[in-house]
Image (cartoon, rainbow, N blue to C red; front, side, top):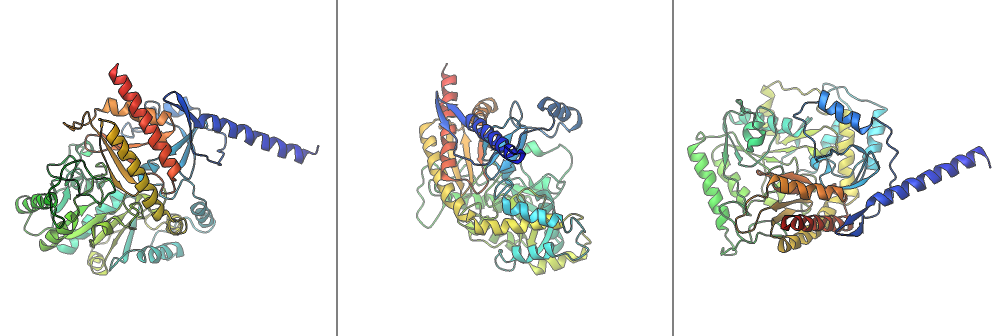
Length: 502
């Protein structure tokens, strides 16, 4: 046998062994029976970097304790492929959190990867003081996907930067100062955006975000008002609702709270109102239909601009529309984008009208890495992939299917208080019982969360009380993946209740 033949045979044999190993670790024991993960034909390379123990040691010694990790034994991730992640031991996981809603089209998507490799051979960085094709090609492509007069971009590196800049723009454009946001909302951790962020865990206890005021979160599940027809979702709350078809009492009550905030806490004229179309970190909270439309009208009557924080809801994730604000039938003055914009590349954008952008020229504002050629190449490929792979429609079909299947768990388990969301932006609110709706304590949440991980499913957590499982996967997941995830969660909930009963 020739050396080349022997090498080929050896390579094939190694791949076979690796494949068999992956098949074995993909077969998870659930409730005493084996449930096989959906198939994946990707074979990761063997991990040959630092030993796990050394990585953990470096984490403790050389990285800030503020950078917390998930799980009792943190995962050491090695490779990713579409909706799958592989750890250093070759175990495969269905990623339902997507790098915190960032890997929109899939880990290492081939088209995005090729676009970055091609750009890598041409130009890495120049800043935007020069002309280069990737920046301008992307600006034209992104602007064409935004409605109305939202055609002028300013590129930054993160959602915090984008929201910070949007707030700055609004203040300069209106010559007003006060900014209104919703309680439980998250808009970043810079000194400006911390004022608009309304979750105490992110507040450092020092002065931040002057001129920011919050109004009541219009949460139709946990809030004071809500009914069974409030949400733009396949799954509604179990609360009763006596509203007529053309009105929503909950919406009107929450709008009254906004009016009271404007009348008591802010100046007569304000700079802006900022809100996510669906709250992300706050726990996938959906507002009553018509709330944002009435809120925008009230804010504009006070001289303010309306900022749509699309950091998590953008790029087709809600399924029915490309942008989350479109699901509310509103037209914002400023839109902020990040996370899925570059499929993992540090990139974000502020999009606004020519009029608002022109007013901002009076301030010299510069961002060294904003519009980086490689990030723009990746982001441009992301837009192509969303269209070519039909990912918006996939969000609608798979997301609706998953929501309806998860709603069966709500009916089955007393501790599943609410299931909500739209497309592939889903929240599961965990409670001690449905009557009191007390948040499920962290220790109990973690038991379920860890068990899902052990059986191959990675979930996010969030909400004001950290009692909400957040499902925001790469938009390429399949119905088979969704069914597997629901089965794993079902088994974890049953296991938790069995433990609690002993």
